[in-house]
Amino acid sequence: MTGAAPAGWYPDPTNAQEALRYWNGTTWTDRLVQCPPADPPPPVGYGVAPVGYPAVAASSRPSPTRGVERGHLPYLYVGFGDCTALVIGALGPWATLLTLSVPGTEGDGIIVIVLALIAAAALLSVLVRGSSKLGEQWAPPAIGILCIVIAIIDIGNVSSSETEWLGQSIGASPGWGLWLTLVGGVVLTVAGGLAVKQLKSGLSRRSG
Image (cartoon, rainbow, N blue to C red; front, side):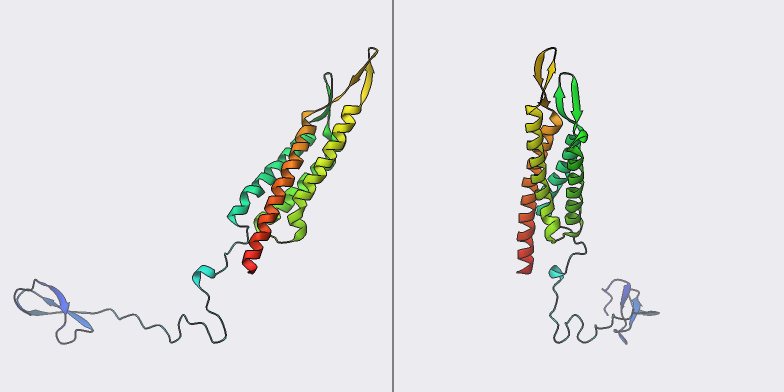
């Protein structure tokens, strides 16, 4: 090495593969450092799938979670909110007469609450496990239809009821809780049906 080379550690002229020797800018010194061992080569066949087994690409490995696809979430979240609205509607007034009101829990509102809880449980199962069970998929829209039927029947019953007060016939009016139950049933039917449609299309793409 010429004198133009700056001082520093360089490969040992006598053993460049295993050691570094210090060059002081003029001549080689006795200061010697062993090179760190090189990484061993990978074993033969590393990263190659055994014969008879297909190689798995990193992008095709299954996700550690079994939840639903992101595109399904809006409809499921709407379904959860609607189940809450159904419970609130069932607890609210279903019939009003002058300053009096009757809550839904005095009648079919109890049924609506039970149905809303069942629908919420089915939605939660689909959200967490991405379930493909037919019953869990169709439970929310079916329950939504039942709530619509219950609300329509009770609206008719309340609207047709009359009572005598001070010699006059006074009719009751459907309360806001009953109307909320009707709207909640419609929204749950639509949101649940759209969620089922997307789930079925997603499963078809996976199987294909």
